[in-house]
Length: 434
Ligand code: AMP
Image (cartoon, rainbow, N blue to C red):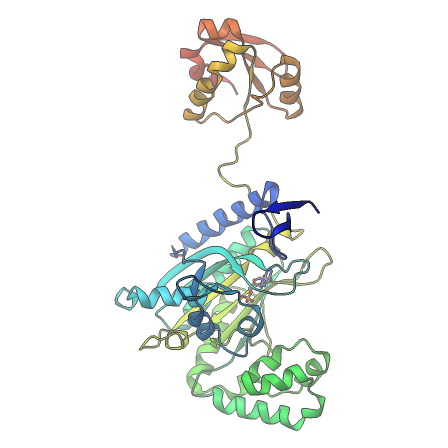
Protein backbone atom coordinates (compact mmCIF):
# COMPACT_ATOMS: atom_id res chain seq x y z
CA UNK A 1 0.00 0.00 0.00
CA UNK A 2 1.40 3.40 -0.99
CA UNK A 3 1.90 5.94 1.74
CA UNK A 4 1.15 9.59 1.12
CA UNK A 5 1.77 12.74 3.07
CA UNK A 6 -1.18 14.90 3.94
CA UNK A 7 -0.98 18.26 5.60
CA UNK A 8 -2.47 17.57 9.01
CA UNK A 9 -2.20 13.91 9.79
CA UNK A 10 1.23 13.50 8.24
CA UNK A 11 0.90 10.00 6.77
CA UNK A 12 -2.18 8.22 5.62
CA UNK A 13 -2.80 5.25 3.36
CA UNK A 14 -3.65 5.90 -0.26
CA UNK A 15 -6.80 3.84 -0.29
CA UNK A 16 -10.55 4.32 -0.40
CA UNK A 17 -12.45 3.70 2.86
CA UNK A 18 -13.09 0.03 3.66
CA UNK A 19 -16.05 -1.42 1.81
CA UNK A 20 -16.13 1.48 -0.66
CA UNK A 21 -14.64 1.41 -4.13
CA UNK A 22 -14.04 3.34 -7.32
CA UNK A 23 -16.35 2.42 -10.14
CA UNK A 24 -14.45 2.42 -13.41
CA UNK A 25 -13.78 0.58 -16.67
CA UNK A 26 -16.11 -2.33 -17.42
CA UNK A 27 -17.77 -2.18 -14.00
CA UNK A 28 -18.71 1.46 -14.54
CA UNK A 29 -20.26 0.68 -17.92
CA UNK A 30 -22.09 -2.31 -16.42
CA UNK A 31 -23.69 -0.04 -13.82
CA UNK A 32 -24.53 2.60 -16.41
CA UNK A 33 -25.97 0.03 -18.83
CA UNK A 34 -28.10 -1.45 -16.05
CA UNK A 35 -29.40 1.94 -15.01
CA UNK A 36 -30.36 2.91 -18.56
CA UNK A 37 -32.34 -0.30 -19.00
CA UNK A 38 -33.95 -0.07 -15.54
CA UNK A 39 -34.92 3.53 -16.19
CA UNK A 40 -36.42 2.62 -19.57
CA UNK A 41 -38.60 -0.12 -18.02
CA UNK A 42 -39.61 2.16 -15.14
CA UNK A 43 -40.68 4.92 -17.54
CA UNK A 44 -42.81 2.44 -19.56
CA UNK A 45 -44.64 1.53 -16.36
CA UNK A 46 -45.27 5.20 -15.57
CA UNK A 47 -42.63 5.86 -12.90
CA UNK A 48 -41.05 9.34 -12.77
CA UNK A 49 -37.49 10.13 -11.70
CA UNK A 50 -36.46 11.62 -8.36
CA UNK A 51 -33.09 12.06 -6.72
CA UNK A 52 -32.99 12.87 -3.02
CA UNK A 53 -29.87 14.11 -1.17
CA UNK A 54 -27.33 11.59 0.10
CA UNK A 55 -27.52 13.20 3.53
CA UNK A 56 -30.72 13.43 5.55
CA UNK A 57 -31.54 14.48 9.11
CA UNK A 58 -30.43 11.68 11.40
CA UNK A 59 -33.83 11.62 13.10
CA UNK A 60 -35.56 11.01 9.75
CA UNK A 61 -33.43 7.93 9.12
CA UNK A 62 -33.75 6.68 12.69
CA UNK A 63 -37.47 7.36 12.86
CA UNK A 64 -38.09 5.95 9.39
CA UNK A 65 -36.01 2.80 9.41
CA UNK A 66 -36.77 2.23 13.08
CA UNK A 67 -35.11 1.09 16.30
CA UNK A 68 -34.25 -2.57 16.66
CA UNK A 69 -33.12 -2.81 13.04
CA UNK A 70 -29.53 -3.62 12.12
CA UNK A 71 -29.35 -0.44 10.07
CA UNK A 72 -30.20 1.91 12.91
CA UNK A 73 -28.51 -0.08 15.66
CA UNK A 74 -25.20 -0.68 13.89
CA UNK A 75 -24.99 0.52 10.34
CA UNK A 76 -25.78 4.18 9.85
CA UNK A 77 -23.05 6.70 9.19
CA UNK A 78 -23.82 9.84 11.13
CA UNK A 79 -22.07 13.17 11.37
CA UNK A 80 -22.42 16.45 13.14
CA UNK A 81 -21.94 19.42 10.84
CA UNK A 82 -19.99 22.53 11.82
CA UNK A 83 -23.38 24.24 12.17
CA UNK A 84 -24.45 21.61 14.72
CA UNK A 85 -26.90 19.62 12.56
CA UNK A 86 -27.01 15.87 13.05
CA UNK A 87 -27.10 14.24 9.64
CA UNK A 88 -26.92 10.66 8.37
CA UNK A 89 -25.81 9.21 5.06
CA UNK A 90 -28.88 7.53 3.59
CA UNK A 91 -28.80 3.76 4.21
CA UNK A 92 -31.75 3.22 1.83
CA UNK A 93 -34.01 5.32 -0.40
CA UNK A 94 -37.47 4.81 1.10
CA UNK A 95 -37.55 7.10 4.15
CA UNK A 96 -35.95 9.96 2.12
CA UNK A 97 -38.55 9.45 -0.63
CA UNK A 98 -41.42 9.62 1.85
CA UNK A 99 -39.84 12.74 3.34
CA UNK A 100 -39.84 14.32 -0.14
CA UNK A 101 -43.48 13.29 -0.72
CA UNK A 102 -44.62 14.88 2.54
CA UNK A 103 -42.37 17.93 2.25
CA UNK A 104 -43.61 18.79 -1.26
CA UNK A 105 -47.28 18.19 -0.39
CA UNK A 106 -47.64 15.46 -3.00
CA UNK A 107 -50.88 14.33 -1.32
CA UNK A 108 -52.58 16.98 -3.43
CA UNK A 109 -51.42 15.43 -6.70
CA UNK A 110 -53.37 12.66 -8.48
CA UNK A 111 -52.57 9.42 -6.58
CA UNK A 112 -50.61 7.23 -6.72
CA UNK A 113 -47.40 9.16 -7.27
CA UNK A 114 -44.88 6.78 -8.80
CA UNK A 115 -41.14 7.27 -8.59
CA UNK A 116 -37.97 5.50 -9.60
CA UNK A 117 -34.65 6.42 -8.04
CA UNK A 118 -31.09 5.25 -8.36
CA UNK A 119 -27.95 5.99 -6.40
CA UNK A 120 -25.50 4.95 -3.70
CA UNK A 121 -26.60 4.04 -0.18
CA UNK A 122 -24.32 3.61 2.83
CA UNK A 123 -24.30 1.00 5.58
CA UNK A 124 -21.53 0.28 8.04
CA UNK A 125 -21.88 -3.41 7.35
CA UNK A 126 -19.14 -6.06 7.52
CA UNK A 127 -17.59 -5.97 4.04
CA UNK A 128 -17.33 -9.28 2.22
CA UNK A 129 -17.88 -10.51 -1.31
CA UNK A 130 -21.06 -8.89 -2.66
CA UNK A 131 -21.45 -6.81 0.51
CA UNK A 132 -20.17 -3.26 0.51
CA UNK A 133 -20.45 -0.20 2.71
CA UNK A 134 -21.33 1.95 -0.26
CA UNK A 135 -23.54 0.13 -2.72
CA UNK A 136 -26.13 1.05 -5.33
CA UNK A 137 -29.85 0.55 -5.25
CA UNK A 138 -32.48 1.13 -7.91
CA UNK A 139 -35.92 1.66 -6.36
CA UNK A 140 -39.49 1.68 -7.62
CA UNK A 141 -42.24 3.12 -5.41
CA UNK A 142 -45.97 3.88 -5.66
CA UNK A 143 -47.15 6.32 -2.99
CA UNK A 144 -50.65 7.34 -2.03
CA UNK A 145 -52.66 4.22 -2.81
CA UNK A 146 -53.32 1.06 -0.78
CA UNK A 147 -54.69 -1.20 -3.52
CA UNK A 148 -53.17 -4.65 -4.02
CA UNK A 149 -52.62 -3.97 -7.71
CA UNK A 150 -49.95 -1.44 -6.70
CA UNK A 151 -48.03 -4.22 -4.94
CA UNK A 152 -48.41 -6.35 -8.08
CA UNK A 153 -47.28 -3.51 -10.34
CA UNK A 154 -44.11 -2.92 -8.31
CA UNK A 155 -43.32 -6.65 -8.31
CA UNK A 156 -43.96 -7.01 -12.05
CA UNK A 157 -41.93 -3.93 -13.06
CA UNK A 158 -39.03 -5.05 -10.83
CA UNK A 159 -39.10 -8.54 -12.36
CA UNK A 160 -39.06 -7.05 -15.86
CA UNK A 161 -35.98 -4.98 -15.01
CA UNK A 162 -34.21 -8.05 -13.63
CA UNK A 163 -35.15 -10.14 -16.66
CA UNK A 164 -33.90 -7.45 -19.03
CA UNK A 165 -30.62 -7.59 -17.10
CA UNK A 166 -30.30 -11.30 -17.87
CA UNK A 167 -31.96 -13.05 -14.91
CA UNK A 168 -33.85 -16.09 -16.15
CA UNK A 169 -34.81 -18.07 -13.08
CA UNK A 170 -36.67 -15.62 -10.85
CA UNK A 171 -39.15 -16.27 -8.11
CA UNK A 172 -40.77 -14.16 -5.44
CA UNK A 173 -40.54 -14.92 -1.72
CA UNK A 174 -43.58 -13.30 -0.21
CA UNK A 175 -45.35 -12.88 3.11
CA UNK A 176 -47.88 -10.61 4.77
CA UNK A 177 -47.12 -9.22 8.21
CA UNK A 178 -50.52 -7.57 8.67
CA UNK A 179 -51.43 -4.08 9.79
CA UNK A 180 -52.10 -2.36 13.11
CA UNK A 181 -55.44 -4.18 13.44
CA UNK A 182 -53.99 -7.66 13.44
CA UNK A 183 -50.29 -7.39 14.11
CA UNK A 184 -50.69 -6.85 17.85
CA UNK A 185 -52.31 -10.24 18.40
CA UNK A 186 -49.69 -11.90 16.25
CA UNK A 187 -46.79 -10.26 18.07
CA UNK A 188 -48.29 -11.35 21.39
CA UNK A 189 -48.43 -14.95 20.21
CA UNK A 190 -44.95 -14.76 18.73
CA UNK A 191 -43.31 -13.33 21.84
CA UNK A 192 -45.11 -15.81 24.03
CA UNK A 193 -43.71 -18.60 21.82
CA UNK A 194 -40.18 -17.25 22.19
CA UNK A 195 -40.65 -16.72 25.91
CA UNK A 196 -41.59 -20.38 26.25
CA UNK A 197 -38.39 -21.29 24.41
CA UNK A 198 -36.17 -18.65 25.97
CA UNK A 199 -33.41 -21.09 26.90
CA UNK A 200 -32.95 -21.96 23.22
CA UNK A 201 -32.73 -18.33 22.14
CA UNK A 202 -29.26 -16.77 21.61
CA UNK A 203 -28.48 -13.49 23.41
CA UNK A 204 -28.79 -11.30 20.30
CA UNK A 205 -32.31 -12.59 19.66
CA UNK A 206 -33.30 -12.22 23.30
CA UNK A 207 -32.36 -8.59 22.92
CA UNK A 208 -34.67 -8.36 19.92
CA UNK A 209 -37.56 -9.56 22.09
CA UNK A 210 -37.48 -6.12 23.67
CA UNK A 211 -36.91 -3.97 20.59
CA UNK A 212 -38.30 -5.68 17.51
CA UNK A 213 -39.49 -9.29 18.03
CA UNK A 214 -40.47 -9.70 14.37
CA UNK A 215 -36.79 -9.54 13.50
CA UNK A 216 -36.16 -12.81 15.35
CA UNK A 217 -37.90 -14.50 12.44
CA UNK A 218 -35.13 -13.61 10.02
CA UNK A 219 -32.33 -14.29 12.51
CA UNK A 220 -29.18 -15.86 11.08
CA UNK A 221 -28.48 -17.73 14.36
CA UNK A 222 -28.63 -21.47 13.85
CA UNK A 223 -30.53 -22.16 17.09
CA UNK A 224 -33.11 -19.53 16.24
CA UNK A 225 -33.54 -20.81 12.69
CA UNK A 226 -34.47 -24.18 14.19
CA UNK A 227 -36.85 -22.57 16.66
CA UNK A 228 -38.46 -20.54 13.90
CA UNK A 229 -39.62 -23.66 12.08
CA UNK A 230 -42.39 -24.05 14.67
CA UNK A 231 -42.99 -20.35 15.29
CA UNK A 232 -46.54 -19.04 14.71
CA UNK A 233 -46.94 -17.47 11.28
CA UNK A 234 -48.35 -14.03 10.64
CA UNK A 235 -50.67 -15.13 7.82
CA UNK A 236 -52.85 -17.11 10.26
CA UNK A 237 -53.39 -13.89 12.24
CA UNK A 238 -54.34 -11.57 9.38
CA UNK A 239 -57.55 -9.58 9.83
CA UNK A 240 -60.12 -9.81 7.03
CA UNK A 241 -58.97 -6.73 5.04
CA UNK A 242 -55.28 -7.82 5.25
CA UNK A 243 -56.20 -11.36 4.23
CA UNK A 244 -58.16 -10.04 1.24
CA UNK A 245 -55.30 -7.75 0.25
CA UNK A 246 -52.75 -10.57 0.40
CA UNK A 247 -55.01 -12.96 -1.51
CA UNK A 248 -55.43 -10.39 -4.26
CA UNK A 249 -51.67 -9.83 -4.55
CA UNK A 250 -51.18 -13.58 -4.97
CA UNK A 251 -53.95 -13.71 -7.57
CA UNK A 252 -52.20 -11.01 -9.60
CA UNK A 253 -48.95 -12.97 -9.43
CA UNK A 254 -50.71 -16.14 -10.57
CA UNK A 255 -52.37 -14.27 -13.42
CA UNK A 256 -48.93 -13.05 -14.56
CA UNK A 257 -47.39 -16.53 -14.15
CA UNK A 258 -44.93 -15.24 -11.58
CA UNK A 259 -43.57 -18.09 -9.46
CA UNK A 260 -43.90 -17.32 -5.76
CA UNK A 261 -43.17 -19.00 -2.49
CA UNK A 262 -44.92 -17.99 0.72
CA UNK A 263 -42.10 -17.58 3.21
CA UNK A 264 -43.58 -17.28 6.68
CA UNK A 265 -40.23 -16.17 8.11
CA UNK A 266 -39.82 -13.27 5.71
CA UNK A 267 -40.23 -10.04 7.67
CA UNK A 268 -37.37 -7.94 6.21
CA UNK A 269 -34.94 -5.90 8.20
CA UNK A 270 -36.75 -2.57 8.23
CA UNK A 271 -39.43 -1.72 10.73
CA UNK A 272 -41.74 0.29 8.47
CA UNK A 273 -43.29 -2.61 6.58
CA UNK A 274 -46.99 -3.45 6.77
CA UNK A 275 -48.93 -6.14 4.92
CA UNK A 276 -46.99 -7.39 1.90
CA UNK A 277 -43.24 -8.00 2.16
CA UNK A 278 -41.28 -9.68 -0.63
CA UNK A 279 -37.89 -10.47 -2.05
CA UNK A 280 -37.01 -11.47 -5.60
CA UNK A 281 -34.67 -14.43 -5.79
CA UNK A 282 -32.57 -15.57 -8.75
CA UNK A 283 -32.25 -19.35 -8.44
CA UNK A 284 -29.20 -19.48 -10.75
CA UNK A 285 -27.42 -17.55 -8.03
CA UNK A 286 -23.94 -16.15 -7.71
CA UNK A 287 -20.62 -17.64 -8.93
CA UNK A 288 -21.07 -20.49 -6.43
CA UNK A 289 -24.59 -21.20 -7.60
CA UNK A 290 -26.12 -20.04 -4.31
CA UNK A 291 -29.56 -18.43 -4.90
CA UNK A 292 -29.29 -14.66 -4.72
CA UNK A 293 -31.77 -12.17 -3.26
CA UNK A 294 -31.63 -9.42 -5.88
CA UNK A 295 -33.76 -7.02 -3.94
CA UNK A 296 -36.47 -6.61 -1.40
CA UNK A 297 -39.48 -4.52 -0.73
CA UNK A 298 -42.98 -4.28 0.55
CA UNK A 299 -45.79 -2.07 1.68
CA UNK A 300 -45.08 0.72 4.16
CA UNK A 301 -48.42 2.30 4.94
CA UNK A 302 -47.38 3.86 8.26
CA UNK A 303 -43.95 5.21 7.35
CA UNK A 304 -45.30 8.71 6.64
CA UNK A 305 -46.64 9.11 10.17
CA UNK A 306 -43.46 7.56 11.57
CA UNK A 307 -41.44 10.40 10.02
CA UNK A 308 -43.79 13.13 11.23
CA UNK A 309 -46.63 13.38 8.70
CA UNK A 310 -50.06 14.15 10.13
CA UNK A 311 -51.65 11.56 7.85
CA UNK A 312 -50.84 8.03 6.78
CA UNK A 313 -49.69 7.61 3.20
CA UNK A 314 -50.23 4.06 1.94
CA UNK A 315 -47.28 3.07 -0.25
CA UNK A 316 -45.37 0.14 -1.67
CA UNK A 317 -41.87 -0.15 -3.11
CA UNK A 318 -38.94 -2.33 -4.06
CA UNK A 319 -35.14 -1.88 -3.94
CA UNK A 320 -32.90 -3.66 -6.39
CA UNK A 321 -29.29 -4.26 -5.28
CA UNK A 322 -27.34 -3.29 -8.39
CA UNK A 323 -23.83 -4.39 -7.29
CA UNK A 324 -24.87 -8.03 -7.06
CA UNK A 325 -26.63 -7.98 -10.41
CA UNK A 326 -23.75 -6.61 -12.44
CA UNK A 327 -21.39 -9.12 -10.77
CA UNK A 328 -23.65 -12.14 -11.39
CA UNK A 329 -22.54 -14.68 -14.00
CA UNK A 330 -25.84 -14.29 -15.85
CA UNK A 331 -25.66 -10.49 -16.12
CA UNK A 332 -26.21 -9.48 -19.76
CA UNK A 333 -23.56 -6.75 -19.80
CA UNK A 334 -25.97 -4.08 -20.93
CA UNK A 335 -23.92 -1.55 -22.82
CA UNK A 336 -24.58 2.13 -22.15
CA UNK A 337 -25.96 4.08 -25.11
CA UNK A 338 -23.03 6.50 -25.17
CA UNK A 339 -20.58 3.65 -25.84
CA UNK A 340 -20.23 3.35 -29.61
CA UNK A 341 -17.88 1.04 -31.43
CA UNK A 342 -15.32 3.26 -33.21
CA UNK A 343 -15.70 3.28 -36.97
CA UNK A 344 -12.63 5.42 -37.65
CA UNK A 345 -9.17 5.54 -36.15
CA UNK A 346 -7.77 9.05 -36.43
CA UNK A 347 -4.03 9.25 -37.17
CA UNK A 348 -2.07 12.49 -37.32
CA UNK A 349 1.50 12.97 -38.59
CA UNK A 350 3.69 16.04 -38.16
CA UNK A 351 3.38 19.28 -36.21
CA UNK A 352 1.09 21.09 -38.71
CA UNK A 353 -1.37 18.19 -38.70
CA UNK A 354 -1.27 17.77 -34.93
CA UNK A 355 -2.08 21.46 -34.55
CA UNK A 356 -5.30 21.07 -36.56
CA UNK A 357 -6.22 17.56 -35.49
CA UNK A 358 -8.70 18.54 -32.77
CA UNK A 359 -10.64 20.55 -35.36
CA UNK A 360 -11.09 17.44 -37.46
CA UNK A 361 -12.08 15.32 -34.48
CA UNK A 362 -14.70 17.94 -33.64
CA UNK A 363 -16.13 17.76 -37.19
CA UNK A 364 -16.51 13.99 -36.72
CA UNK A 365 -17.99 14.32 -33.22
CA UNK A 366 -20.59 16.81 -34.37
CA UNK A 367 -21.60 14.40 -37.12
CA UNK A 368 -21.78 11.54 -34.54
CA UNK A 369 -19.05 9.50 -36.20
CA UNK A 370 -17.52 7.35 -33.43
CA UNK A 371 -13.73 7.47 -33.50
CA UNK A 372 -10.68 6.41 -31.53
CA UNK A 373 -7.28 8.12 -31.52
CA UNK A 374 -3.99 8.33 -29.74
CA UNK A 375 -3.04 11.95 -30.15
CA UNK A 376 -0.02 11.58 -27.89
CA UNK A 377 1.65 9.25 -30.41
CA UNK A 378 3.69 10.58 -33.35
CA UNK A 379 4.71 7.73 -35.64
CA UNK A 380 2.50 6.26 -38.35
CA UNK A 381 3.55 2.72 -37.45
CA UNK A 382 2.54 2.91 -33.80
CA UNK A 383 -0.80 4.54 -34.62
CA UNK A 384 -1.64 2.06 -37.37
CA UNK A 385 -0.81 -0.88 -35.17
CA UNK A 386 -3.25 0.34 -32.51
CA UNK A 387 -5.95 0.72 -35.19
CA UNK A 388 -5.29 -2.87 -36.26
CA UNK A 389 -5.28 -4.18 -32.72
CA UNK A 390 -8.65 -2.58 -32.06
CA UNK A 391 -10.01 -3.96 -35.40
CA UNK A 392 -11.29 -0.55 -36.44
CA UNK A 393 -12.47 -0.75 -40.07
CA UNK A 394 -11.17 2.64 -41.33
CA UNK A 395 -8.36 5.05 -40.54
CA UNK A 396 -8.17 8.73 -41.31
CA UNK A 397 -4.57 9.75 -41.91
CA UNK A 398 -3.93 13.45 -41.52
CA UNK A 399 -0.36 14.48 -42.46
CA UNK A 400 1.43 17.74 -43.21
CA UNK A 401 0.42 17.73 -46.89
CA UNK A 402 -3.24 17.07 -46.01
CA UNK A 403 -3.15 19.79 -43.38
CA UNK A 404 -2.04 22.31 -46.03
CA UNK A 405 -4.61 21.01 -48.56
CA UNK A 406 -7.55 20.81 -46.17
CA UNK A 407 -7.94 17.13 -46.92
CA UNK A 408 -7.46 13.74 -45.24
CA UNK A 409 -6.59 10.25 -46.42
CA UNK A 410 -9.27 7.64 -45.66
CA UNK A 411 -7.82 4.15 -45.52
CA UNK A 412 -9.80 0.93 -45.62
CA UNK A 413 -8.02 -1.19 -43.03
CA UNK A 414 -9.25 -4.48 -44.52
CA UNK A 415 -7.54 -4.07 -47.92
CA UNK A 416 -5.32 -1.04 -47.34
CA UNK A 417 -6.88 0.86 -50.26
CA UNK A 418 -7.10 4.58 -49.65
CA UNK A 419 -8.58 7.82 -51.02
CA UNK A 420 -7.69 11.44 -50.50
CA UNK A 421 -10.85 13.35 -49.53
CA UNK A 422 -11.36 17.10 -49.16
CA UNK A 423 -12.49 18.07 -45.64
CA UNK A 424 -15.57 19.73 -47.11
CA UNK A 425 -16.60 16.37 -48.63
CA UNK A 426 -15.49 14.15 -45.74
CA UNK A 427 -18.83 13.56 -44.03
CA UNK A 428 -20.49 12.79 -47.35
CA UNK A 429 -17.71 10.34 -48.16
CA UNK A 430 -17.93 8.62 -44.76
CA UNK A 431 -21.68 8.19 -45.15
CA UNK A 432 -21.10 6.06 -48.24
CA UNK A 433 -18.83 3.65 -46.34
CA UNK A 434 -20.45 0.51 -45.03
P1 AMP B 1 -32.37 -4.11 1.66
O1 AMP B 1 -32.50 -2.64 1.46
O2 AMP B 1 -31.51 -4.49 2.83
O3 AMP B 1 -33.63 -4.84 1.56
O4 AMP B 1 -31.51 -4.63 0.40
C1 AMP B 1 -32.03 -4.68 -0.90
C2 AMP B 1 -30.99 -5.30 -1.80
O5 AMP B 1 -29.80 -4.50 -1.78
C3 AMP B 1 -30.51 -6.69 -1.36
O6 AMP B 1 -31.33 -7.71 -1.83
C4 AMP B 1 -29.13 -6.75 -1.98
O7 AMP B 1 -29.23 -7.13 -3.35
C5 AMP B 1 -28.66 -5.33 -1.88
N1 AMP B 1 -27.76 -5.10 -0.72
C6 AMP B 1 -28.12 -5.00 0.59
N2 AMP B 1 -27.04 -4.77 1.37
C7 AMP B 1 -25.97 -4.74 0.53
C8 AMP B 1 -24.56 -4.52 0.72
N3 AMP B 1 -24.04 -4.28 1.93
N4 AMP B 1 -23.75 -4.55 -0.37
C9 AMP B 1 -24.28 -4.77 -1.61
N5 AMP B 1 -25.58 -4.97 -1.86
C10 AMP B 1 -26.42 -4.94 -0.81
